[in-house]
Image (cartoon, rainbow, N blue to C red; front, top):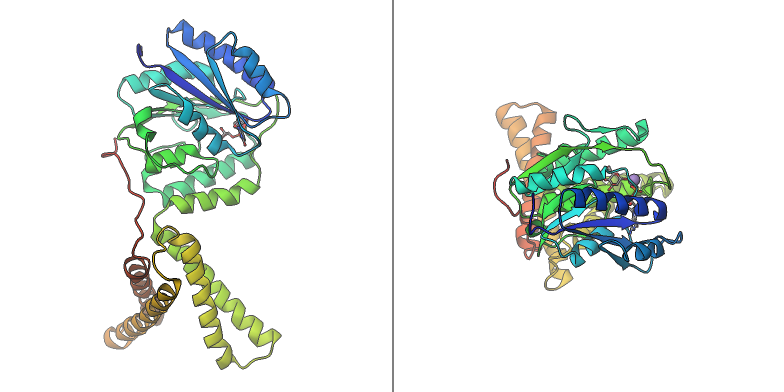
Length: 366
Ligand code: GDD
Ligand code: MN
């Protein structure tokens, strides 16, 4: 068993007075039985139910430290703030509400001892389950997991990417810039962390006995944005391009049907409108950290990439259709793909050339 390990258990709380009190007692029992030195770090967002006072009282008896933040600043940032003040060489993160079984923690720590860098408490490996969940919640969670796996290759080796119960070596996250947005700190860690071995340990995700879940429908949207932020720039570039196409269509529709302009007049206006729309989204989002030099230069440059897209699409599509007898739709589709790639490459390497892709740390997967 870990001897010098000192484990820090980070617990975010918002209105969890009853739960966190019980949890701290159980953790104490579980950890001292196994002789594992540990501390608990509770990060409370000034819960109106007096969670912080309850934790403060417990800190007389148990090795508990409390971080109180001025208001509800979000789950992910609470976890990161807790990790920041944690002293242990191994960090554990779990919910306060007893949905994450504390009895599993020593086993998860043992996995770290055995060489895992990250251990995920998982509902989806043999022996894991999620009983306390409504069918809707299950579907949303599965969909979110699927989106992550499609867009974030590094998460694919983990079955339960949405888990909020995990243990990691401090070195996995130390010095790694982790964004406090979203709910899913584990995703940030899996995408950006320095690790080579991720393991999963089966947990039974239990039903809540007290209080209520803080995750609602509004989080779905911010989750998608979060995943896109972690994804490769090409993904964001394509998302913006698709939205730009919608803007283009809406402009043609509005100018044509609502204002009654000639179609040939609306086409170039729609083209320019969507080009500007794309440009500003690329500035504000796709390439947000690469804004060096004057905006006008990039604006002109981006128009150049759009022209390159257009010319290459025209050339490839016609060449395939007339030169090689490829079908119309396939010719056009290929033209679009080539145009997109060219547009993306020129944008990334010439227009927003300061852009640096998120680097993955760590070695091969296991
Ligand atoms: N400090 C702080 N600030 N804590 C928060 C906040 C916040 O804004 N929002 C939620 N928490 C705390 C809760 O008090 C609880 O201890 C924990 O974070 C998880 O919140 P719940 O509201 O219980 O989440 P859930 O049960 O719906 O979702 C859980 O399951 C997911 C599995 O897919 C969480 O564990 C997620 O992290 C997990 O991904
Ligand atoms: Mn919960």
